[in-house]
Image (cartoon, rainbow, N blue to C red; front, side, top):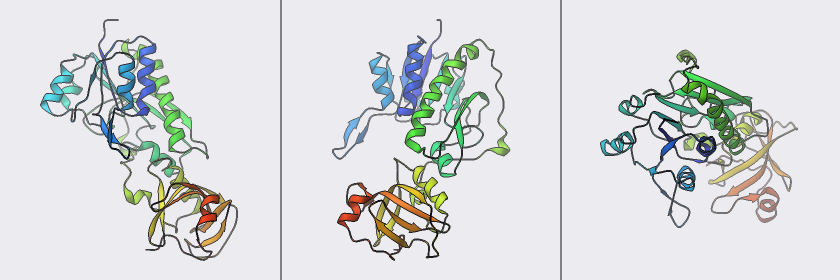
Amino acid sequence: MDLRIVFMGTPDFAVPALRRLMEKKYPVVAVVTQPDRPKGRKRELQPPPVKVVAEEYGIPVVQPEKVRNPEDLAKVLELKPDLIITAAFGQILPKELLDAPKYGCINLHASILPKYRGGAPIHHAIMNGETETGVTLMYMVEALDAGDMIAKKTIPIEISDHVGTMFSKLADVAADLIEESLPAFLAGELEAVPQNHEQATFSPNIKREDEQINWSRSARDLYNQVRGLHPWPVAFTTWKGQPFKVWWAEVANEISDAQPGTVLRVEENGIAVQTGDGVLLLTDVQPAGKKRLPVAEFVRGRQMQVGERLGEA
């Protein structure tokens, strides 16, 4: 195939798409990914997941600190790509690079555009209680996730799904979508559709305030918040003035007229907490300075009392 594809991606989400391209014998001449970053307690440099896969297939890897830097941009342009495919690369591409490939730059975005443009579409979709999401294959433009849409694939969000399960599912959807769409795209048989910008919503990267539980919200909303932040970066409240992470919770089938944030029960099956509407049962928690604990283990070893208020300074 007389074609030069450059694949740009960084986290686990991008891995199945890259693998699928290689399995289907597409000519990926290079992978562009983020630099190695220090991780863990020892702060040892770790390669991005996409780099690991690229090296497995013997694909050259370029790791620009910022692809907009003239020197880094030149390295990518020297690859002479006919097509750039991106998936969660993590940087905005400059116009010079967007204009370089014959077939343009196309991106696998983990939402049904124009909803949830931005860096955390999966988190926000779950936190907002959406019942479906998907992946959009789109042209890249200078504006954030605003390019014309080439193809879409939709899947349900089950009530038990969380960020971890949906990342895995959507990564596979992205791989399926690129496999199904690329032959027709390269043949010029797919007509891109402009987005309705008036319907656009945004999903910026998660901030600390997004993680904090507001007990005046409903139990259902808080359940969606917990699962929309699981297993990263994790929702939290405060207990005795210290951060108290809530890794998992359930909506309890009970009614109370206590003040929001009040601890109603402390039992091995969960800590029942009053919300603005309903009761939330905390089942997997992490006190400040301690490891993550199933609630039964936490309850046996710590003195949380019925009537205490979570979320108070």
